[in-house]
Structures are given as C-alpha cells and as structure tokens.
Length: 85
Ligand SMILES: [Zn+2]
Image 1 (spheres, rainbow, N blue to C red):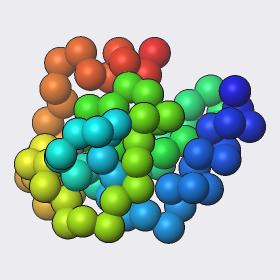
Image 2: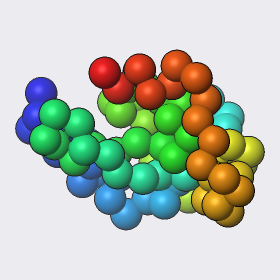
Image 3: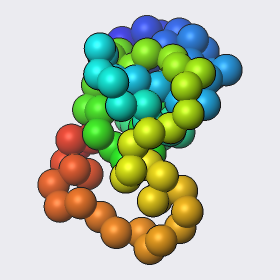
Image 4: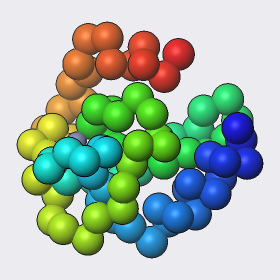
C-alpha cells in the first residue's frame, strides 16, 4: 500500500491541481503525511482516497481550496478530519 501511494504521489508531483475521479471540480493539491507516508491530497480534504485523484492542469475551481489558500481563517469543516483517521 505504501509503495502504491508513493508511486501515486510521484504521478501527481508535477501537478498543482487535481480532479477527484470524474468530477468536474478542480482542487488544489497538497501533501499530507499519513501513517508516516507522504501522500497527495487536496487542500479542502474533499477526497478521502488519494487513489481517486487525477492530475489536472486546469485552474483551481474549488471554492473551499481557494478560500483556504487565501488564508481566510483556518476554519475546519466538522467531520472531515475523521476521513484521515
Ligand atoms: Zn477542494
């Protein structure tokens, strides 16, 4: 599993944004550490499965990713952190 995640991360390393599966919303990519392994994730934590992320060269359209990046206040959406537990 860890090796798969590392390969996934390298596939996404050059991308700044990603879609989730076949979704139309483009999210901003970031990196999280999950059980000691760096894995790709989206800023707004909308994707609970990094394997579903697809690299995208389109501008970020996710409002939550954009508002977080602009530093409007570190708000947490209740429950979303639990997706990584
Ligand atoms: Zn997003």
